Image (tube, rainbow, N blue to C red; front, top):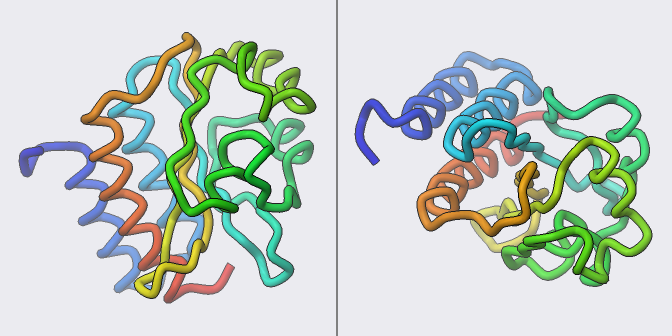
Length: 170
């Protein structure tokens, strides 16, 4: 990645926003936009944050419809459900190349399929001490896995998101 890379630029912008006292949503939205750029046309990214009750809540998902966000709001981290809930529960990257062939999506697959998505992947956002603070998810319009470049990019974005989550209030 070069200095003109959208990920490097987004991380720098997010750090500036954090230092300036910007709201968490604005910082996370900046990072989400970079993930969408790296993943290409039609990809949609989302940050879910674990709340004080241990449930996943929307942190920044500017290109997902409100109905979808409402349907997934307050999911409990669970290794057997979706990609973000599974990543939050396991602390590991979770890939669903196709919603149609992944049993973790049995109860929820109708939601992303209705929006024209075919697959997704999620990376946990971890604190410095290894606690999962949330997830960084990306949805694709075709059945596929993330590229090495996408994984590397979201790893940097997730590290920056962790800083924002550890130092800002909802």
